[in-house]
Length: 639
Image (cartoon, helix red, strand yellow):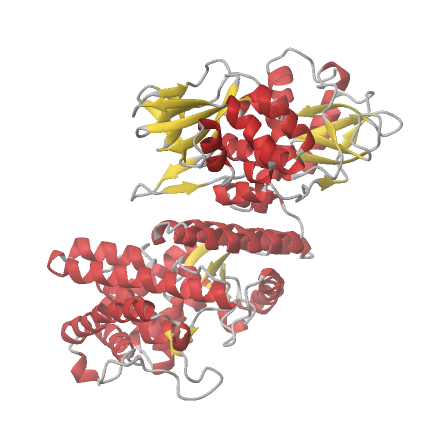
């Protein structure tokens, strides 16, 4: 029976990486040198700015929080519980701590002497990679608080950090922009501006990197007046450069940037300074490679010049979406972030399409998205719905002007299709002449839909009245909003017909409370979660917002929030509708990611009993909101 402290420590350590890759003898050697620490709640193991200890730590029992900041102004970066390592700075950099480690509850901690562990790093590649990955995760993690206090990883999640222990190579920028030692600062500044880059590498005649200049150098040395713009680059360049080979891993790249306190690495043919420069890797590029930072993805989108690269960004968005769902981030937050990235992608495609046009737009115009995109609640890659409004022109110029924008729209819709947004089967896209018109013609169209509603007009208006400005002259969409509300105020019949359409949506449940499934077609025996459940909640929110003449609130969840404010007596119903919609949109998104489709049609036989019950609970507010519409707009008279 094992009874020594070292053997007990060994039994604990072998359960966790990187110790699980060590031999029994190596583990016993380490265990014999470990110190056992007890920390009371609130007690510091080390503090930010303090000297680096001669040991790193693993939590045996309890929990240790890692914090940035001092005293009352501290931000929680990560929580380490049983088996988690922290304080690895001694193994990597040996500089002062950049965060504090404090016991969040009574904890037992093992202190592992760096001197004992270092020889194992040299001989065991798996240990080395794991330590690099864990240190990188702690160094870069930056959590923000959600409305429920949950943590959102806006840079590198713990799961992503585990991926760092793989041999995944970095993705660096090839064909870096370079200059020679004979160039002036003014010349390279112009070059950097034209190329929209943040650094330039100075090379010699053999194309070996001899120095680097970044935006930071230009600000610190030129904008401050320390050097004249006519000076040669050699006077302000940073040298020697830090070089690596193209085979370096993501974890190694992160540590190199942190260790040398730099923002760029030079990639050379053999990894040395005496070798040809073949690429550049920036801190920004490294963050993008993880694909789970919304702000970085948006910034990267603005710089991209090819559709192929934009498609890569959209795929990263899908990974981000999946990660957020797994972390159970609040639905509103997910919708907002994904919508922002989608909008940035659309804007970039418009900009690239404009560059391909033979001439600049003849008049001002506005590109707007419709339907779920217009409501800013499109999470999955579903159909694209969009339109173009352009400035009024003389009648004789109309055809030529429309032709220009149809050509532009064709490029935009093709670009959206390339990155993953399918063409609309009903051709509700700006490339259709019917949805690419002058402002006055759009005004006429909207008035016709509202004042003299038809069955087709009611259907189309339910899509087109959820529009969102994306690019161009925003005042045009503002004008269309005015037309909608002017028309609604003159025609009660229009809202009534919209209400009738909502009541006529197929019911989600039958008489015996069973799911009503599709009876024929390619989706036979599946449940249409969009038409039978989500669209009723979407339509009802739209009708009531129109009823109250509230413009600028297009999102379904925000609409129900606003309605709860306006009608306190019905606040409970609106909150129930909002909750049901949040559950439904998450459920549909998970199904879509699982089956790589729109998530619209659900295979009930693949759902657990619990999932089916969750869905059924969402149907109660659907019936209640339909009843509210029936009474308020006296819909019996229209049916």
